[in-house]
Amino acid sequence: QKLREWVDTSLDLYKNELSRVLYPVFVHCFLDLIEKNCVELAREFLEKYLPDHERLHGAEIKMMSGLGAPEHVEGNEQAEIFRKNKFYVKLCPYSFDLLLRFLHGSDFMLLLSIINERIVVNVVQGGPDPLVEQEDEVPVITGQAP
Image (cartoon, rainbow, N blue to C red; front, side, top):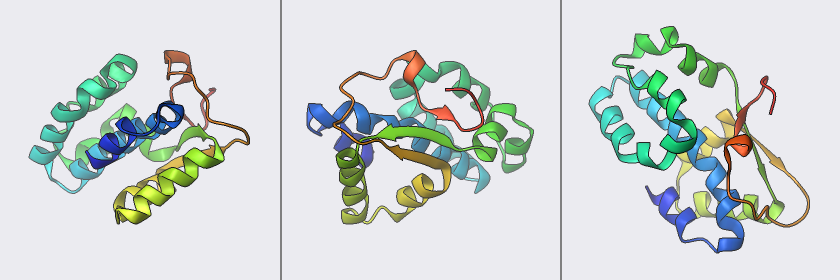
């Protein structure tokens, strides 16, 4: 919640870019909770943050919403894709630096770990991308065409 609040209150110039990390973090937090057998907490997490991602990722989330035990993750096609591949997210250097400073400053090492292990952040020179995330610009999984 703190990460989402921080992104939402960021300067408009960086907000759209920073919001690109929210969905991959959401996915892996949910899957981590399921794999740790915190199923009820995972359900609450899903219900709370589903509205943030449903428009662009509803079909993917629906495929994962039936997970009810750690062993279900291996048998779920969408969960396996997320676990065996990394998300690809493009950020300008300043957005990336802001994100890292926030995570370190807030002592969010678990979120930093998820980003480090599960997301490929492509730092692209220049200013932040001012475009709002659209369906054809959502974070993609490495190994799949962007």
